[in-house]
Image (tube, rainbow, N blue to C red; front, side, top):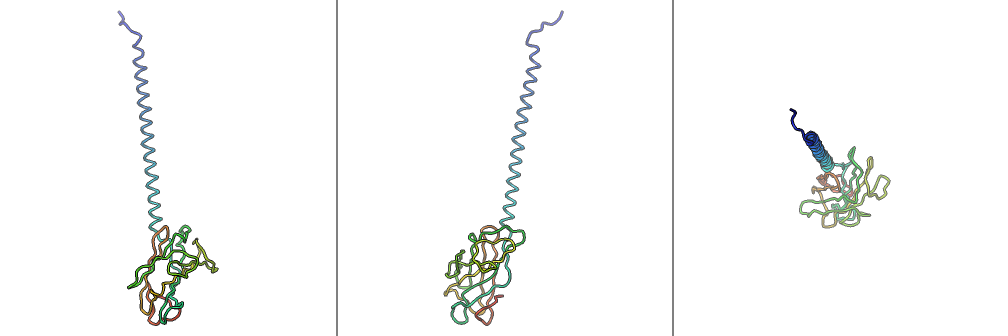
Length: 191
């Protein structure tokens, strides 16, 4: 005698196949989500590394000497600072309007300068290109001359130390300290 087969025996295999397919689909969706999250995390970490390198690298470099000039200051004193800057090789172009310069000296509170049309006051610095024209940007192979007045209260004399820090909008700051010579002339090369 043969066992009694009902109509439902055939559906057990079909139901198992449907459940198996459902598990495979759920596993595939889960794997897609996990891989997508991994790719997203990798991309964000890569962006963070590139941004960190960009922020930490010094984009500005000093070109030539730093000069201190007597421009209407008291005798044996200077009140105008002048130097040239350029971009380090491989650096992106820079907007000078985002740059600031901090000037300080012993017994002088730090003074912050921003870009202005002329270095005619104690709050702005001027930036001119190689042709002598005012500029607001610094690109590869450019050389920009920076000038700013220290003001009559901050005039410097023989042997005084000056500290200048160039702070670009993006990238590391460029600080440097220079010393006035023993004999002050109208134009002095700082060392």
